[in-house]
Image 1 (cartoon, rainbow, N blue to C red):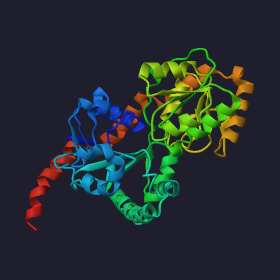
Image 2: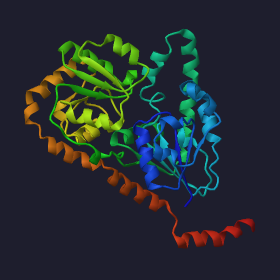
Image 3: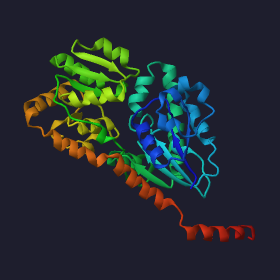
Image 4: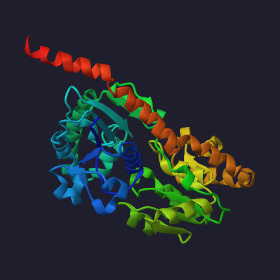
Length: 375
């Protein structure tokens, strides 16, 4: 089969791009289509494929402000001649147009959260002035209608967690199969803990890293924050002396930070949370807001807290410190293997092979094709 992978945009390496890497290994001859492409920010395995960007790519430095044009751009991607299209979706990727003979599988990280479940948060954050409020409301309404309509273009939906499966059913009224994202669990290792907690996240408001910073600053606990984002300057200004901002770090250094932390902090609701599984693969417990995908990945619900905020997080940290010496690090590492790259590849291969027409079916289609012209 001729295969194409459609990924929303390729501007940095995050969880969605790690899934894309796994798809590239699974389909080494697949072409990649995307809205925006920044090659120097993307891994070699993705760059080794033929990557086609949309006509919006020259404006990629301002890609977040181009949301109104993204439906038009994604529908202009030329996918003629492909037998299989896999869209990697948490933006508009599933809106691509394909022929009736093309099988379209959508691996959904989440329906666009800024249009659906997180819309009130984004709306009130983006619209502090009246003109922004007036512009955003009708635009979001139009984009929701478009996003809902494009769900009908997908033949098979795959969800990255049961959490996202529920969102797909709610937003699109479509059934989906759950295949957890791939995590390179064998690349991580355990080491005795040093005196710090760890948070790894893009620094945006809905990730709620502010809660971890406030909590650790107040408690005097050392916290290392890995990641960049729009909130970086504000968070750094409010942090106490016990908080260290590491920025983006190389993969080897990140694995070492995981291995030597006391515990991993996840104060925001994640679709799935690959970073939490990476912490588990390092034998480290996850202290998290008990919402979203982490409830499926972490085997220690005693370390969840159920209302967002630095106060509930502090209580969860104190519960952890009371039992820290009793935690079985090897059992956490063993648990993480259910999210391995090998398991992802096996499950994805089964779905892809199920969409591949048999030799007999291809011959029958070829035989019947001329009949269409006799009607």
